[in-house]
Length: 145
Image (tube, rainbow, N blue to C red; front, side, top):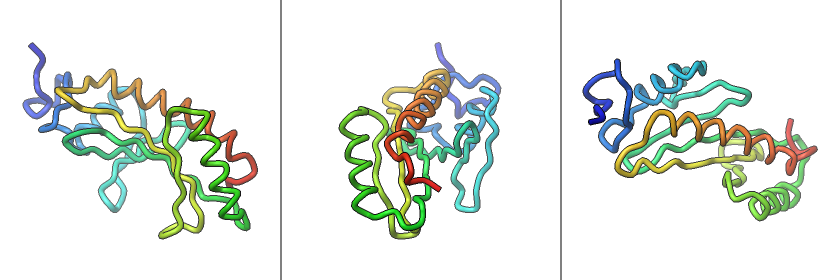
């Protein structure tokens, strides 16, 4: 029988709706040799080829990558690039932000926790997200800083 992560950090075998904390996610990613840090907002930052934010709730783990757009890039061009990427790639989801960023492109990918998420599945999902980012960046050619 699998052991719940809330009982021990020594044997991380299942992430559940009751054990999805930032601390648990950090433990899983560091065990897979990713460098991690917690930022001033309490978000987990996973450093790989890209800077990825990992957040969780009782339903899913969300992986997020934010790319500032090049100064002078038009809003219409950014939206057209995002639409093209969303049409041609099933994952990740792409969208634009302008509230707190000066035109940022955001990619995110959600992994469902369901009845339990294995650390292996979470790490493989992060690696899949990284490969999607590489593909998605081609849709933003010339738009990123």
